[in-house]
Amino acid sequence: MTILEQLADHARERVAQAKRNVSLEAIRRQALSLPKGNFSFENTLRRPGLSFICECKKASPSKGLIAPDFPYLQIARDYEEAGADCISVLTEPKWFLGSGEYLREIANSVSIPCLRKDFTVDEYMIYRAKVLGASAVLLICSILRGGQIKEYISICDELGLSALVEVHSEDEVQAALSAGARIIGVNNRDLKDFSMDTDNSRRLRKLIRHDALFVSESGIGSAGDIGKLRKIDADAVLIGEALMRAADKKNMLNELRGIS
Ligand SMILES: O=C(O)c1ccccc1NCC(=O)[C@H](O)[C@H](O)COP(=O)(O)O
Image 1 (tube, helix red, strand yellow):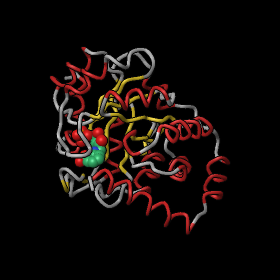
Image 2 (cartoon, protein in one colour):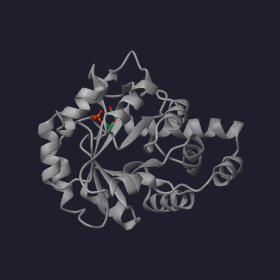
Image 3 (cartoon, protein in one colour):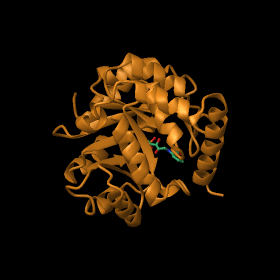
C-alpha cells in the first residue's frame, strides 16, 4: 500500500470516529449556520504577482520530524508579518503531527486566509474545515474520483470556501479541469514514492493557462526556485519544509520574496 493510500485510509477512519461524536447532519448544519465565506483564498491568489502560501508543518511522512519545537501560533504570526499571502495548516495527526485545533487557533489569530491541508476523503472534512475557520481545503485528485471532486467543489461553493485541487500528472490536470477546479496545485513531489521533480510545474503549466489559478507545491526552497516559477507565470507557491527548518522564518520568507 502506498503512503498516500495509507493516509487516505486513515482519513476515512478519522471521519468514521468523528461521526460517532458529531453526525454528518450536525456538522453540516453547524457549517451552514456560519456566515458564508467570501472565497478569500481564491481572491488573494487572483491579485497580480506571485502569492506565497506558507505552511505550518511539524512532521511529514518523507522527512519525519521537521520541527521538534513547534510554536505554531508564533510561526503563523511571523509568516503574516513577513508578508505571507495565505497560510497552509496541516491537520493530519498521524504522519504530520497536525491538529484541527492548530488550524482553529491560527485562523483566529491571523487575518490572512488559511488552507486546511489534509487528505479530504469525505464531505464531512469540508464542513469541519469551515467550522474550524478555514478559508480553503485541499482536494487531492489521486485519492478522489472525478465525480467526488466536482461534488466537493460544489460543497465548497455553498460554504464560500476555496478548493485547491492538487494534481501530479497530465491526466489529473484534465480531471481537475473537467471537475471545474478554479485553483490547481501542481505537486512537485510524487506522493506515491516521495520523488521530487520541480520541473513538473513547468511541464504541467502548459496545460493550465487561463482556465484556473496555478499553484506550484513542494520542494521550493531558494530564490532561484522562485525565479523559475515567476518565469512560468505561477500565481502562487506553497512552501513548507524550507520555512519550517529556517531559524529566522521572517528573514527566509523575505529572501524568497526577493526583499532584502
Ligand atoms: O511532505 C510529505 O512527505 C508528504 C507525503 C505524502 C503526502 C503529502 C506530503 N506532503 C504534503 C505537501 O504537499 C507539502 O507539505 C507541501 O506541498 C509543502 O511541501 P514542502 O515545501 O516540500 O515541505
